[in-house]
Length: 166
Image 1 (cartoon, rainbow, N blue to C red):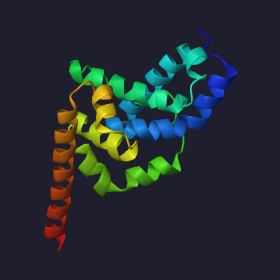
Image 2: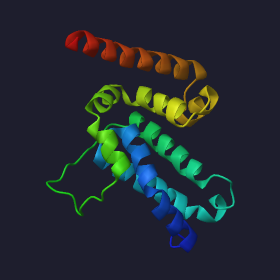
Image 3: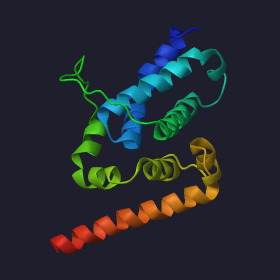
Image 4: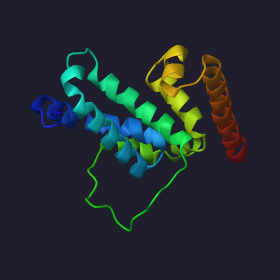
């Protein structure tokens, strides 16, 4: 158990902003995204001796994040909100651009978690349907139907906004 391995610490520090953005897209909630990144990096740190020898440690972390999310969907949600965060947030310009686009954020946030994860894995991560099915613990047909329904919902939301504003 070598979580304090300098190589792991360097990896985590360097990739943290990108991993956080990815977690935010999956969770649609800053608090959940922070928890997801922390849990995935903790798991990665505990296995770093084996992971660092592989070609894609970031892929391992992202896969861990998707699996953690899939497990969370299966359990009842127990959230506890606090009045203020324990430490101030850091600035991330990529994240701020994403959050400033209310249209994208609200449309994606309106999707159910599994549908959102399928779209992120397919179009952001460019994963195959087989990989997505394996990561989410579902069938390839479920992946296809979730992707189709998710895209249909996003298209309908865009059409409705255009009709409403045009």
